[in-house]
Length: 172
Image (cartoon, rainbow, N blue to C red; front, side, top):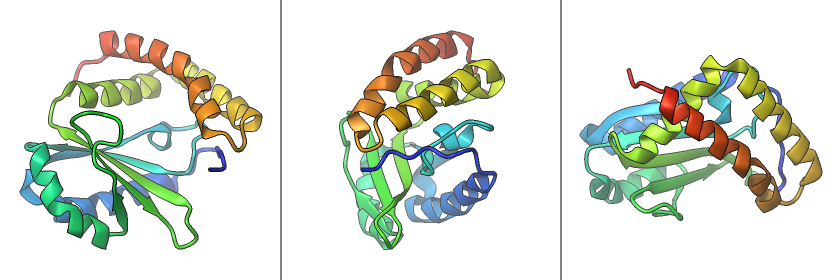
């Protein structure tokens, strides 16, 4: 997988809005909330141009019953994909480029809190967001064809910010 980060694009929010409506229809009344997360949700920073959706549901097991509907939207059903209690979906465009990730968790879980705290902290602390952006940009140049190297390079910074964010964050 080619590692590409690009400057923030204001269209990412509308792509999230459109996709979240389709996902909400498929997952139905089980959905508590759908959030835009990941770097595309943080203004003014470099990001891989993949829209991350965080879906909070009442019952995670019921998500499995919606697999055919998610496939009809163009998603690959990936199961937990390395995180217990998650349901992960991946969407690619016609040429095979990843366009969307969906991370589905039980509402109000620690994973939901972790993702939302990180996003909100970065939005409220543009100096840390800028450091993260610069790190991502540098790592993408250093590891243009090594997603593992890129991810490993971000890991320490992300953990440091998550620790700060979880102390700082208060949900709406």
